[in-house]
Image 1: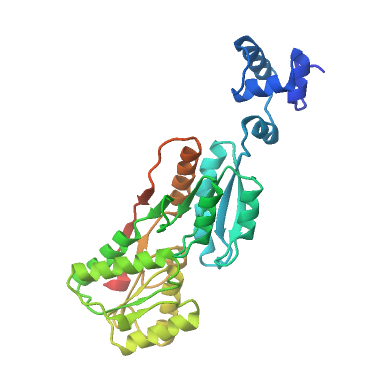
Image 2: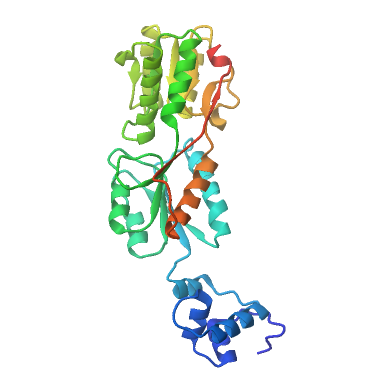
Length: 336
């Protein structure tokens, strides 16, 4: 074999044969682990550099006891509206993973089924996991803790000793609610989704704190949770209108979009007849008229910070148990 102008991949076996040493010795020189003389290590490293040797992920993983894979565990029940959030998170994760010469292995998780995640972890196919959604009763976080695999979650959790990367939803929702009160709104309706999703609970908490900070009494009759279907949202809007609220706050972009659709269908004008705001902004609301007051987050940043934190954890560096990322309050015409 002519190593001066190599066109095909050379293997650990090729390096070992050329230098007259064992494949184990070559692996130790590459990984930097195990007992090996400094002169031999130098010979191996110089040879592979001269011949553009690049170990395959499998060989490199075996040498370093790594898989060079990270698992991105995203909700399998993501719909067409929530999927872009998780896709943008994955873009942020990928930015970091690629820079580390790693690959992403995707697992779909469900509230009552994490069989795929269990199979991936139990078969030792990944070096770490990023969990894309947190639940109040979080079986996935508990499983990952018990498995011993390094992992971080995107979101917040009450599980102890879990690394969390989240936006500061409580502070953001508190601030937006407070601003709307200071602008003259006194009677709110809040329409939200599944209360078992931690993000919905934190947004509800922020809403309540915003009212309390402005000495506004909260009316439980105007809080509508579990609005998972469009028909649920429409019923909530109808009840809110019957209760003569000044403003409907929506927990996410889909609920906001469906609320606006219901108001338009009933020929109720925004903001003249009622104000509208959303605790989450997305492309879904970009072309809505009037422009919607909303909270702006960056899912790509969430993914990037989660991946960086996971690699720090894997490498034994000190990491914070909880990191809260920033947000932006977008005041638009829908609450004028």
